[in-house]
Image (cartoon, rainbow, N blue to C red; front, side):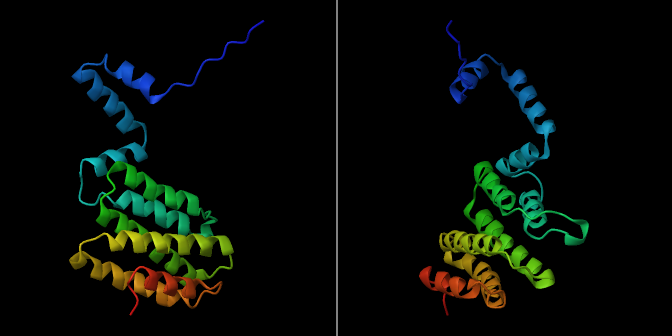
Length: 182
C-alpha cells in the first residue's frame, strides 16, 4: 500500500489562488489579516508609513523582552527582541529605522543591566552581537544623520565596561572596526 503525502503549500500555491481574487476580495483578505493580530497591524503600518511612530510597537516588543519587569516574573528573550527587528526589516527596513531599533535594543539592555544587574554570558553575547548590528546600521546612514546615533551607542559602550564578560572591550573593538572610535 502506497502512502500518499501531500506537499506543504508554498508561496507559488498561494499566489496562484490570489490571482482569482478581485480587488474587493483582496482588500477584504488584507482587512482580515489586519484584524487577526497586532503583528500584522504593525507590519502594515510600517509598510505604508501610517501613524506617528511606526517604530513604537517594535520598540515595545524589544524593551519587554530584553528589559523585562523582573518583579512581575517576566521572561527575558533576546530571540524575541531580535525578531521584532527582523519583523521591521521585512515590513519596510528603512536604514534609519534599523539604526534606531538596534541602538534602542542596546540602550534597553543597558537600562536593564543598570537597574538589576545580571551574570548571563548568553545575554551579554547577544548584546555585543546587536551592538555590531547597530554599528553596521549606523555606518550606512548619511553622515549628517549618524551623529546622534553614535552619541547614543557611545553611552552604551562606556557602560559596557561596568558589566564584565569583556563586553566593554568587545564594544571598543567594534567601535574601532567600524570607524567610530575616538
